[in-house]
Length: 166
Image (cartoon, rainbow, N blue to C red):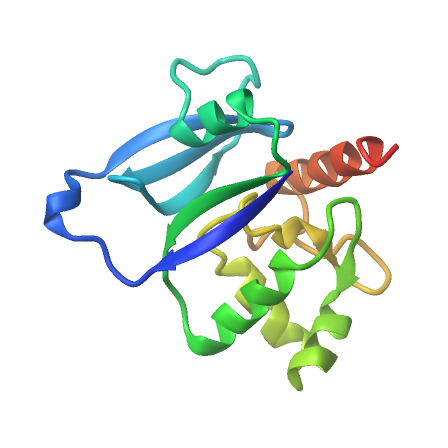
């Protein structure tokens, strides 16, 4: 399953108040912050029970009722121009595949550390797959952590994608 990202420059007050809903993923619960039909940010709910969710997001409903492989999603545009370039590179990494921070850095004429910092600042984990970026000799980090529950999420997402490649 891939997402077709439509970037939205801003959300108006007419979109209504921000609503926080939960999305069930293979690695646990992901909180999504919506205004209207635009996702403004996502954050992992660590220490969650994967089956402990009380409502489905409209994104999940699209996934449940869809037989297509690409789901359109509106995201609020955030970050610097460089971060946006890194995130665009992440969106083209196929499910079940990884690239290193160095490989992305070469593509962008940058440094691996700058790419890692952009991955750390990703406001849309899971939707923009920063979990598919690894270090040359290890898994690297995930959302600023190199150990702990967020690294378990990264490992789980990568394992899930590899299993679904068959």
